[in-house]
Image 1 (spheres, rainbow, N blue to C red):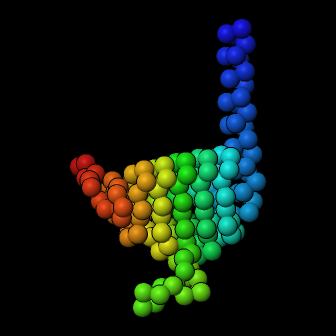
Image 2 (cartoon, rainbow, N blue to C red):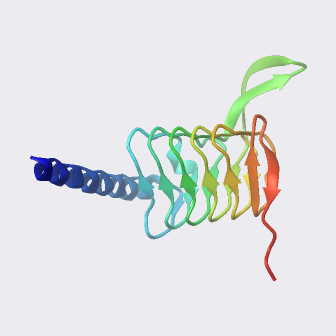
Length: 165
């Protein structure tokens, strides 16, 4: 009986990986640009305006992520986006402290080899440099330089990874 459960578990996990590859292939045809290998996109990922997404090679998007790409989203190579993260390139306009009924679209750029932690929110107009880590639950409202660890609400750089010479 134990062997049967083990085999079913292995089969289920292989099926999930296969489905993620199929979803990646499907969206690679819709995205503005997509690298090879195509991204792995897990279940329950929502894309608004996926035709405005540029995706590098080897990107992995985990379950329940949310993308609003009206202003454009660019993901570098080998980016990992953990579960429940949100990347927003569109927002409501705020003037004089009042929310207007008008949307503002600003592109979001995420550099290569960056890891976005679970539940993180990336706001419109943000650029995250390559080799960076965004902590779980962080709200990124300003640019994050390359080789940085950022966390908190709002996110701030808490460590920089120096280039070794």
